Length: 269
Image 1 (cartoon, one colour):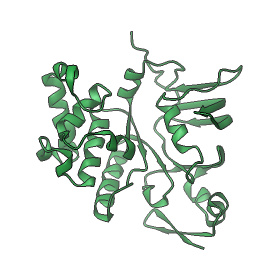
Image 2 (tube, helix red, strand yellow; image 1 turned 90 degrees about the horizontal axis):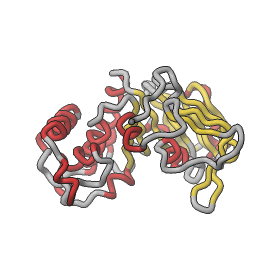
Image 3 (cartoon, helix red, strand yellow; image 1 turned 45 degrees about the horizontal axis):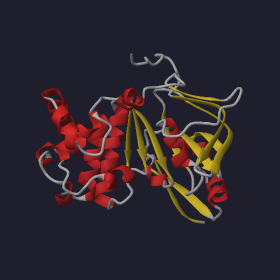
C-alpha cells in the first residue's frame, strides 16, 4: 500500500543530517526546512552541495543513521520512491542528456509514468490509452503537442527541455524541482522556459530551483537558501540574501547585484 503524505507536512524537514556522496562528506549536521507551497531557490557555487541536496530530496541519497537525525519528505522518512516521484516532478539537464536522440516527445513524457529513461522493451507493453492521453495533455499544456512524434535529435535544446518539463508534469505533481533550468539554452529558449516556470508558479505550483545563476530565479520565488561548502550560510527573503556583500563572500570574488523587474542580476564588482 502506498504511503500517504501528511497534508500539512513540510515538503522537506532535515534535522542534524550528515550526508555523504561517494567518499565525500558533503553535509554535516545539516538542519533545514522547506514548507509546502513555498517557492524557493537553492543557490551556491559548484561543489557547495546543491546536487547532493537535490538527490536527498529525491531519495537517491540518505543520511547517516544517528540519534536525533532524520530527513522527512512530505512528512515521511520512508517512501515508495515511485509514489514519491508522482508527487515531486524533477527536471534537469543531466536527465535530458540520458535520453537517446531517437526518443520521441511522447515517449519522453510517457516514461514519466514509469520513472524510466524512454519506454523500450517490456515497458512498451505497459503503455495504455490513459497514459498516452495524459502525456498529450502535458505536451499541449506547454505548447509542443505538435512535436509529439518528433525525435529529440530534430528538436532545439529548448524544445527538448520542454519535453522534460512535460514529463515532470504528467502526474500533475504539487511540487516541481528544477536543476539549473536554463543550462545549455540560448537567450530565446531561456526566456521562454523561464516564462513557463513563472506561469506554473502563478497557477499555484510549488517551485524549487537549484542554480548558481541569479537570473534563473523568477520574480515569483520568494526565498533563497545560499550554500557554501556544505553549509547554509544564508536563508531568507531574496532581497536580504542576494546582496553583493553576501555573494562576494560565498563565491569568493567581487560581485555587484542589480534588480530589474523582479529579476536579480550579478556582474563584476
